[in-house]
Amino acid sequence: MKKAYEVARETLKENQRIMKKDYDLRVRSRAYSVGEVVYVLNTASKKGVSKKLAIQWNGPGLVVRRITPYLYKVQLRKTTSTTNHDRMKLCLTTTLPSWLTKAKEVLLQPNATTSSEDIAAGAESTVFVKGQTMVVS
Image 1: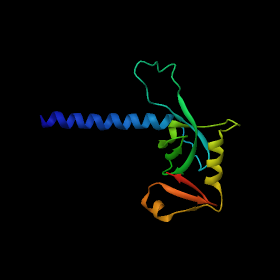
Image 2 (image 1 turned 180 degrees about the vertical axis):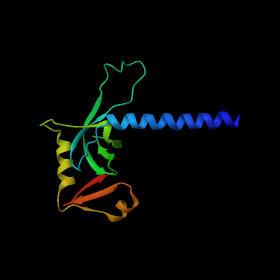
Image 3 (image 1 turned 90 degrees about the vertical axis):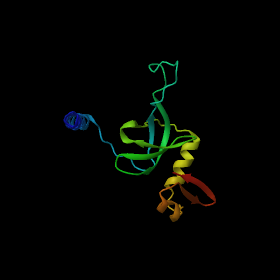
Image 4 (image 1 turned 30 degrees about the vertical axis):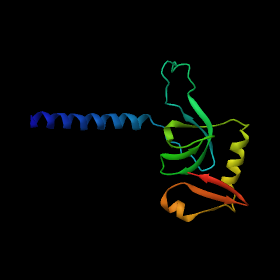
């Protein structure tokens, strides 16, 4: 029985290595900067609704924070989510919703200050700009 487990473990490791190599060959790495406008891939599906006819992209949203070179915090209209770079695409729309324009202005203002306790905790950050408050995750 131990022999069977060892063979299975070795086979899984080899398959994982091959799958990672294949994925790395095809993945497109694109770095997004804070303040860029993006769409987020909608992977959720509702029962009884055709995936083919469902909306594929949510957004536009605003890149609020870069967590790692591959993970980003993206603020959509009502929610903020952590998203992998390969589930995002750049929004090239020239007309943006008013909430997005305002959020982008607040985020990119040079005199914005962020509370250091929130940043150190890695939790949501609160940005204060001339009497305006914006919660940034």
